[in-house]
Amino acid sequence: MPAHRSSNLPLLLACGGSFLAFLDVTITNLAIPDLVRDLDTDVSALSWVVTLYTVLLAALLAPAGRVADVLGRRRLFAVGVSLFTLASLAAALAPGLGPLLAARGVQGIGAAAMIPASLAFVLADTAPERRTVAIGLWSASASVAAALGPALGGVLVDGFGWRALFLINVPAGALLAWLALRAPAAEIRRERLPDPLGTVLVALGIGLLVLAVTEGQSWGWDDGRTVAALLAAIAATAWALWRSRGHAAPALQIDLWRSGTYAAANGVSLLFGAALYAWLLIGVLFLTDVWGYSELQAGFAMTHGAVASAAVGIAIGGSSRRPSPRALAVGGALLMAVTGAAIAIALPERPAFLALWLPAGIVGGVGMGALSVGVSSAAALSVAPPRFAAATGLNIAARQIGGAVGVALLAAILAGRDTTTAAPFATVYLVCAAAAAGAALLALRLRVSTATAAPARDTAAAPAPDPTDRPAAAAPATR
Image 1 (cartoon, one colour):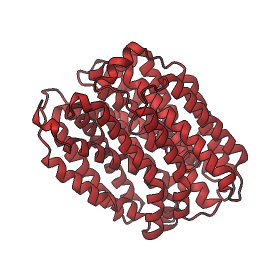
Image 2: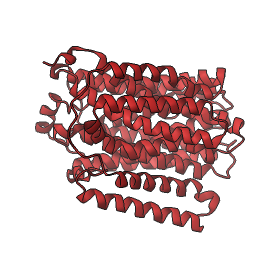
Image 3: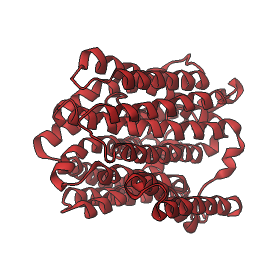
Image 4: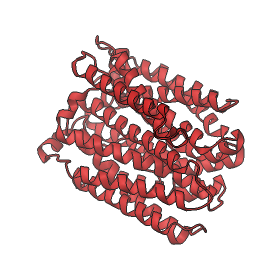
């Protein structure tokens, strides 16, 4: 056994990178109400604080796994965490919305480098007999970020303002960058870097789609700008897919979609992300705008859903007799759909934490945790073990794309409406419920045989929950 496999440093780096990258997916929702006041702008413009990070993370996740093979996981991780840390500092010091958005975009690029590099540490630098446990810890680190994010964000915003949400990344990122330089160098494969044009086209396609949905309400859905953005998004995406079909080093490994289960898992992740990210942000806005909660109160009011989601995911992951991925995904998505519809119907304009918010958060959190584990397990087990990292990266990317579109839809629904009443928020919850119901229907196509699952548990392809699953699956009625 190589000497470096006895060290815990690679696993520490992997868990730290996962935690840091996905904490910023969840914690920044708490910044939006404070940013609205501080920058004197609206939710539609500020939704880009969330979506720009998500767009670039989604576009670069899929090809970044191959970059880790070409450049080496240690080098890519060090570059990614350094970029993320410097961008966090820039975001904390941003004098206005423009510089803040630019910093968030660079953060997304850094996070996209960290995640596949951290997964590579787990798969390559952990002894086979410890690999399943290591993957579980890697996933659990993101779950802890999910559970910690709401309360930590509330405390920081209430005590120090929105800039503290970004500033907190700086010491943690600097420590990880220093540790990465102390990690053993990895073997570098003599392969080509992923298609740069295809990668840019993916980012353009996602970004232009989000732009059209976000601004369509204010521009007008029949306005030339909206139509042009939609057509350009379709053209860029189609071109990226066409290039990926025949490219030696494609930006998107679309041949993975030849597996019906894997293709369905990506579709489920897309719908889940659309429902989930809108749900996470709408909870913050509703609590502060309608119920009059402070950011501190809102943060703690959201924590129970995140804890429920993380607890369910960890419990299922550690069980020796877990349900099938299809049962988990269908059941979890249905729970989320029913909870979202119930919230939309019963949402009051006066605080009703014990009567509605607490039980809805727990039930929805259980559904999100189950759906997270189910869809990520199906994605992992539907491909050969050597392709686990690529499959996981593309599945995470689908989740992020859905999330970007979901937040854009939220911004479009709220634009121009009275957000001091419950009605527009109820509409968003209904849209989330519809997306979750669609995910449940599509999850019926997830079919993973026992023969496939068995060896995968003994290899690097163990069906560990996707790290974005539980952080993203934080509090249902809460974030």
